[in-house]
Length: 493
Image 1 (cartoon, rainbow, N blue to C red):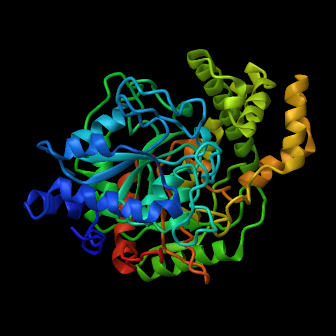
Image 2 (cartoon, helix red, strand yellow):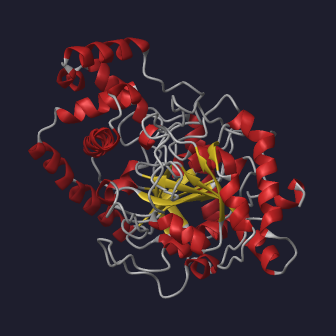
Image 3 (spheres, rainbow, N blue to C red):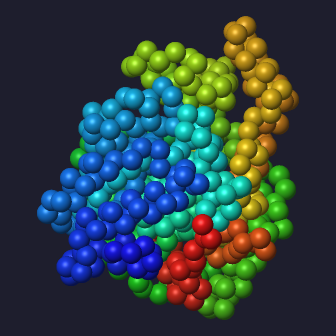
């Protein structure tokens, strides 16, 4: 199959071609590999090709709703047996996974042909994808800019036409941020809906989840059906699923909705006029579709939520580094300085203070639930501005120098109390202050590509639903997609 024909179809469409015998899984795979070889030297989306495994799989009988469709998984927790899951880290790049993760098993059961792993920042800790070990991934719409993070490699691969949908995950916006940067659909499912097993009960107290980034809403809906097809008997939740499929729910037009929107950063940092314009454009679209849209925001203390989020985030980094060092014997120098500093900051937090921060998640969740008693959805920018340039969020040299000195002297407990550290943390959250709310509260949220800047860069908007609102988000997304199609837009690579 020629690339021009391949690019016309989403994953559901490609699976239909395979089912009708119009193309073979092997032909689709070779088209995807050829496209990757054509563009990935500029984009750097794929960090570990798996062509041998994929060709062997494509030659076998495949079944499932997406049988024969080429697919990429994120190089973070989405384990493929026998293949290293590098997590963007020098410490793990040569450590093979002992077994499939549950989400990979479900993707394989759906008939997908996995042929590579996509780039991610080390341990997924940043909103850009610039790991030292693999180099930066670039936005196909403008190679000087980021595709976002931490699922930046997956988003870049989809935007570049390598695959129509790719594996992703979201612990603080890591599905929605790259989707917004690259003009794609990014749904973060609610807490506990997608299994994290077998090695984890849940990620980050359930704040993080696996999912996908795609060009079309129906691909995202089908993928959610695949990932929630069965209960994980070892999982921590008995999650209530809808009586019908998410694909069917996505096809049902929503009733007129009441939607509250805000463009103010919850942490008080500036919001670019283009991000405001993106929301205003969405408001106009929604009003034309018959929805009631008005300014409103949940009564959440955004600064406190950010602090509570970062308390958990830094602790997770510390635990991850400690576990990897215990398991592999990796020296400290094999971890990036920024993450070593985050871990050091976490070690200065008392266990009681950590628990108090986690207990406050309840306050944030109940404040958002009160908002959803009045409004069906919350609308915000996904990003506080257009995708930043590569390197824009790198830690300043002076702070890196200070950090190295404190690590050497064993004085890192003082780092988190310095003004420079707090300013750097704020600077890194400022471009993405809107996404952590859905993670902390465990609510579903989606980024949709409804706007482009005058320079042609995508800039998505975010919708946050109440508990169990995945079907509503998909329904509204389909309505917007039909009114303002986006899937055929292609970057000028």
